[in-house]
Image 1 (cartoon, rainbow, N blue to C red):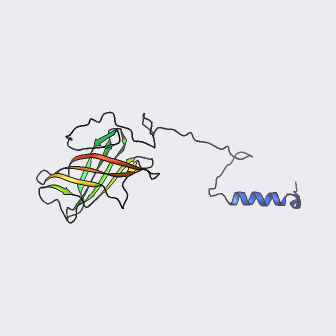
Image 2 (image 1 turned 135 degrees about the vertical axis):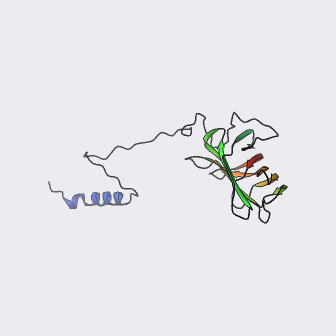
Image 3 (image 1 turned 180 degrees about the horizontal axis):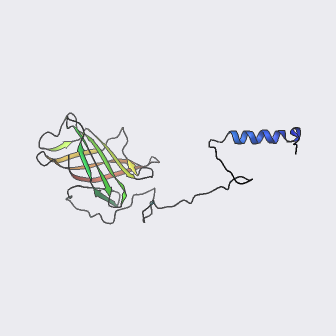
Amino acid sequence: MLINQSKYGPLFLLLILIFSSCEKEYSYEGGDSLPPTVTLPIDSTFPGDTTHYDPGALMSCSSCKDSPDIAESSWSFKTGNSLLCGTVDTAFILGLERSSFTFFGPSACGGDSGLIFTVYLSPNTLKGDTSNMDATYAVFYYYHTGQPYILTSHSDQSFNLTISSYVHATKMVTGTFRGTGFRDDGRAVSVVSGKFRIRLL
């Protein structure tokens, strides 16, 4: 069947403009109509988690206990009334100068969330026993796998991190930290009473 182009010309032009402006191309075979639109449900929980995630506040980890001491290979911090903690499964010196290190590990709230810290000490180094050494710069990152970060420091606003004690023979580092973490929407969250105790490789 022939189509009167003068009658339907504007309609064809409009359809061409609509389809050519799409950013993605889809292939649909086996039908004579457009494929159905699929709307994915929005879930208020992270995949694999049983607790609800409130983007406006951090939830406490129920297994975290407030204590002046901290166990080896552990970290903890507070935000408002929430206490978060976890373990450190990786900690090592960065570079031969021994002037920076990193440590990270999962949260007690769930294995898919956790903490990453990178600490810069230059011109100071970890080549001998030391105490009460302030970091020159410290990068804080509290994450949830597969989701926008939960909290992160900004490049122009370092976390305050102090090495309370470093024993070179055992490579054990104990320290404290505090600072401002930022949500992915820009909201600031005060991180206080941070503690860690790690053995550096």
